[in-house]
Image (cartoon, rainbow, N blue to C red):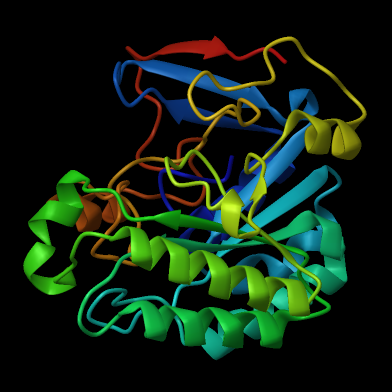
Length: 289
């Protein structure tokens, strides 16, 4: 996965393409920093890009010979919530370009996460979601929705987010409205690993990356191709926490914002690691397919 820990596409595309051409990438274990996993791209079956800004990698997509799945997060929040995310109109155009390049079936949009406040209320989300579906009609078939969790960073930024708890009526209104907007634009809408699946309002019951989709993309089946918690296909993330410069106030991956600039300054596009370099006393283990 490229990446659930940071936005590699938005901020580190040059590094990723250098690694891709070199044939391998190193990933430092976030829990055991001296342990480094080495992943050879010859052992990779599918590359899943997760980003809020696909623009930097679009010129390079045709150079990537692996199967690609793109998840683009597109949310309707303003700069006080997402300080460094580009204007949403640019992202809409980029999604269309990605869809034309790799195919509509390989592009998913994530309206993720949803939180409610006096400013970003249910009516606001209904209008924003409908507008998004209208603009992406014919370029996207699938939309994934999630609801904001109270991560460390979220709680810290509560005075900025000003979020409130959802009511059953909120879920009902969102479920009915989102389903209607998706259906009229020939899209499916779903949640993934949420207590509220909203299937009673027309959402489909499916994981973000199912074993069936992985098989369709790669032609391969594996016994362990399922994560233990969310039931999605198990993936290896090559990112590093606390290194995303979007600075979104609800982010789970930036749990210590004080480290972001420090980590970014350690980034070398020619290093095998995203942040820093491999050290003499690091233990490198090749991760097998």
